[in-house]
Image (cartoon, rainbow, N blue to C red):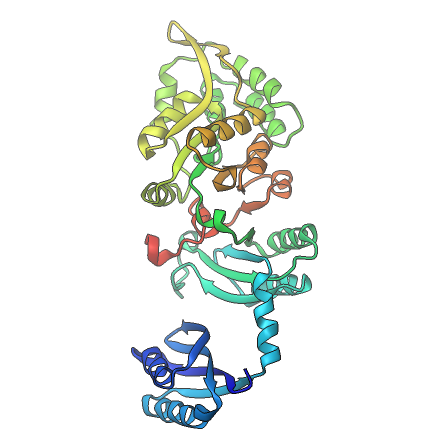
Amino acid sequence: MENCNIILLSVFGDDKPGVTATMTGILGGYNAEILDIGQADIHHSLALGILFKIDNDVKGPILKDLLFKGYEIGVKVRFTPISVERYKQWVSRQGKERYVVTILGKIITATQVSLVSAAIAEQNLNIDSIKRLTGRPPLDRTNIEDLRSCVELSIRGDLKDKSALSSKFLEISANQGIDISFQKDDMYRRTRRLICFDMDSTLIKTEVIDELADRAGVGSEVRAITESAMRGEIDFKESFTRRVSLLKGLDESVMKEIAENLPIMDGAERLFGVLKKSGFKIAILSGGFTYFGEYLKKRFGIDYVYANNLEIVNGKLTGRFTGDIVDGRRKAELLNLIAQVEHIELEQVIAVGDGANDLPMLNLAGLGIAFHAKPKVKANASQSISTIGLDGILYFLGFRDFHIGN
């Protein structure tokens, strides 16, 4: 190491083809060893960094050639000598844990990024890189509903207090109107294979039992029970039994009419298209009804549907159900069972839901996402999405718009 120099080459200027090839070509001519390399392009502005090692006797000529070539192709070149001790310290950090922080919203402001990065710094974590996952945002904001913006931060270090960081992110999310995902950057994050959804108010923009209740003339009564159950105030089994009993006498044909007009959640079409192309297995685990789950299964190519069966006699609902109730505990059991059947580790499973009865499966899965959920559910789930549609899940998985289309 005594007969060598470690130098950081920084290149700035307008992005154009061949800059990296030209600079590394000069380095190669002097048998330089590249220790690290990184490049970013922001609005056609290039920032290229190359950390390289060379012998002392070629230091002068190689720096001169790099400077001359930079002037020739119209980029600025800067050199920073790196001491052996500083390099060793940098190498020693490579064993530190790596994490990914995803910031998601309609738009992303400087204040939001500042607050998130400050929370990261408070934990003595270092940001290694930042990349934008969404396409370039338009200046025309006439249709705010179509806007989505997402950046991903790769961070490294020894996390001091995960609970404190999660609480801080929850606070920032609530105050700033953004979603913040914090995940360990391990092999499971890149190899998710099964995703399990709640149905009502998750895959569809309604509670089907409320739709049925409206047709039966008991809408207000059923909704009051539903809201109480979603807030976790009463047992799901009790609330479910009470609500179903109020549907007694409703004609079976009403179910077909509701199924054909289900309001699909924003982003669902895009999400399912990408998941199917990526080889995911998809399941619906719902406290709703199998009839409607089967309709969604046919429409989106879903692999598994587990929900509740309404008893029908002579074309009328009896106010009873058949089989076991799919409650929170049962959802978690089914998620675990499907993972076993598909030979998938629980760390490779994603669960998505909005209600208190979804928490058992959200907490069992490797990635549990509370989707447009009540505050109690968001506070007890590891991740949440409240700003955009279901396709926001893709960004938590690291997908980028130019890979999956807009």
